[in-house]
Length: 279
Image (cartoon, rainbow, N blue to C red; front, side, top):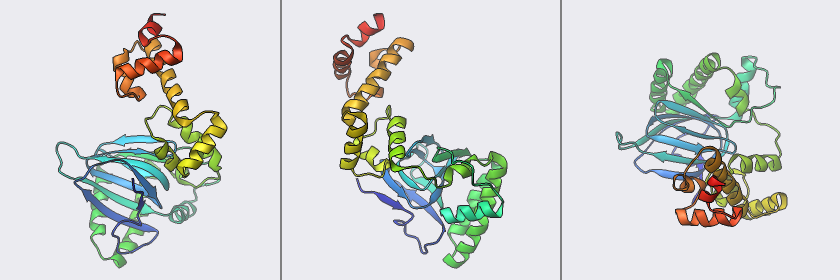
């Protein structure tokens, strides 16, 4: 699947530290690989949106919007029964713009960054009005747009800071995490998510071959075998402590049919899921 680079791949008339784009489509996408070159507000208007980032998974409907940190993510966008189109107003801003805001408003950035790369917020009357104004700005010529986006960005950030606190700001501040630590966090965070090796390597900002080498080096196992074991261990937990039936969980664990799940479970635990429950 081709990687989409945002905002670079959008039809923008200008390129700056602040950009807005009214995104509309009638096509759905599932786990599209997206490289965000700037931090991004995604103000959802129609449809639903699911996003996997390095350490976070978030799912929203049009009552909410997202703030996403610069970096790689997997994005799913779907239509709803009530809408023919998916629509989201994308508001991009650079790390430099963020740091200028923190300096102007005397926000202490020496605090350790928060390990969260996506935030979701619910709309209120003020934010609905703000998005309507942002749509109007997106329709103006580039020269006026750039000047007004500076004002709109500060307005939005001040409002969120006063109503939501400052955690979301710290989550955006670039940190000095090593690639190795980021890799380990992604593996642990997504061990129960049904992501492919290609998708995990993309989130890790690695090639597939490098991801596999690093994985086998540190986990002494292949990714497919390690993730299968973790999901089977989770299935055992669900069977024993949550009284789930095998037919209720095989898809959640990542198997296409019940018989394959039972066979894999028996191979690992020496008994069928039903026998394990009764043991």
